[in-house]
Length: 454
Ligand code: SAH
Ligand code: SF4
Ligand code: F3S
Image 1 (cartoon, protein in one colour):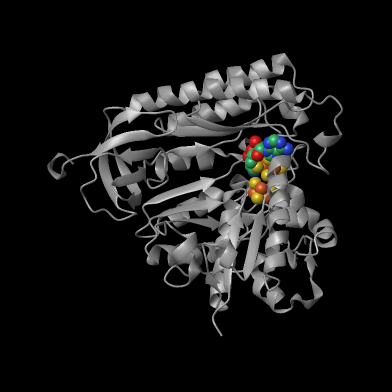
Image 2 (cartoon, protein in one colour; image 1 turned 30 degrees about the vertical axis):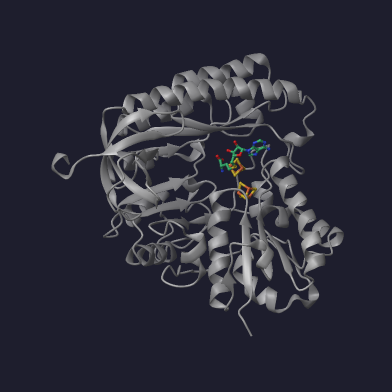
């Protein structure tokens, strides 16, 4: 009998991307083969995101399309995983009989066992407070992970914690990912070592709020007093690892010790995603973010003092309930003050079960759109100004993709660089010296320096 094939479609954040890789590896170990063509698959997994209403609608409409595919191919198995599965599992099972399996965010490691016992169509929606992330060693040398999911096996994500305890008033994540759980230090270090031994040069440590790593669990085998900064230092000394990044951080838990790592840990890349969400103290308080604009700005100043070339990015929400013109002006003035290298900005979206969904003074959709446009236009201009400052300078760029006459790589600051003179045969993961010759809003163009100029 030929091997069964599977197709995974991933929505949402890097946590989901990593979870999809884990599911792909588990399926590969059970003899499944990954296919890039969903029409050919015996098993389709949607790894879903619930962060804004639009993200969830995308999943629901794709499930509608899959209903037709299942009619054509009754042997097809359809699995919904991720944050929508966690939040809406019961309704999905009830309303969508073509879905075979709904699997919650804490249950991905049980995927293959659940598939083996599909008869009962399990609904895995309960989150557990004493859940532990099991040890997991990625297999980059064989199986589907290398072929499909890791088009770039020289850089990998490594999940260090799950869940979130912060309950920002607009956010669904504490309900979809459960309570914050930190992985054991030894499990993380084992995984990091195995990645580097397999040739990985860049690791990004992942969690919803990595700054609170270690605060909620006994995570180390011999001590329970182990911070995220300690973890960063421990990973950074793995021989062969060249670049280290992490995401994402709630500013309220950003310690001086961690900020100092930007000065002291050489392979820690000068890049920091520090979501602020609003520039208005009144809105920050309604959001339950637990820091003020002033405290945030102090941290930005400290980070820039420790590592002057650091590229800061952020997340911003416009149109939070009750956001006045004045509040929005505060957001715009924060953007002017910080001068982010880039940002992800969103219109506030009501999420069921969150506190802000009960707030009454919702902002009109058209006004939200106007504010988003204004914010994004200004951010684009600031990003371009930053990028123009790179022109004429030379940076080490890690090659990411080499395809038909075009090479794309990244600087340590995480800027995408298109490399013009592409006569050399480089491999992804190689680091080359590139002089920047042109700046766009979202990427740079550069040329390779001759060997003797390097
Ligand atoms: N843990 C991260 C956020 C992860 S969610 C942090 O605390 O920074 C990614 C981003 O989605 C958030 O930073 C926020 O900007 C946005 N977001 C979350 N919930 C939202 C909502 N209800 N409406 C609009 N944007 C939202
Ligand atoms: Fe959501 Fe806030 Fe947790 Fe980030 S810190 S995941 S925004 S609740
Ligand atoms: Fe979305 Fe869940 Fe990530 S809601 S942003 S996939 S944690």
